[in-house]
Amino acid sequence: MNCDVLIVSTMEDAASCAQAISEQMKVGVEVAANAREALTILRQREFGVVVVEENMIEADSVLGDQIWSLAGLALPLQINFARSGSARLIREVKAALNRRDGEHVLARRAATAELENELKTSVTGLLLESELVLREPATPAALQPRLRHLVELAGVLRERLRQTDGVHARVG
Image 1 (cartoon, rainbow, N blue to C red):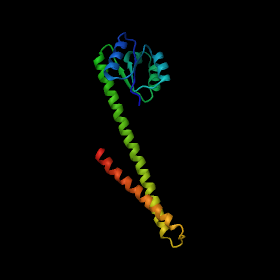
Image 2: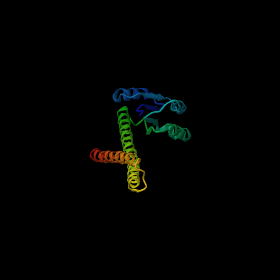
Image 3: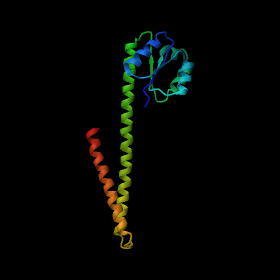
Image 4: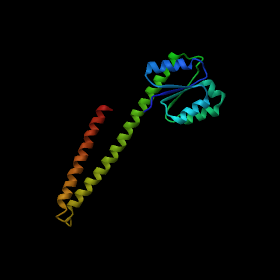
């Protein structure tokens, strides 16, 4: 996941803010001097956070909407550079990246849980159907060893999935 930062600002000290963020947070930081330049940069690569000067958004809301649209999954920050120093900007960027990381962790956990539930359902169905076929008197004797093996494999999978439930309960 990309943690680079794009700063969109006409302020002269935007470059020094960018350097401070880069040094303190050990992330790449690019500066766009205007909205059009920002759009060009956003078309070329992705960022973790996009910081835009409030005045630019207020001056041209259409360009602002285009920036936010092209920002993709980057967290958007609107900052008044005239009132905010680089220390506050660094705090805001850190907080945004921490929120983003937390959201990614939660999304991964949710996706993992959903996949595990789907697997459990499939394995349970496989196990049940295999056991039912084994109980059928018309099941050919030649197939019974294979079906028993299938039941064993499904049972092992079910047990592994149960074990991951305990791990997730302790971690989550």
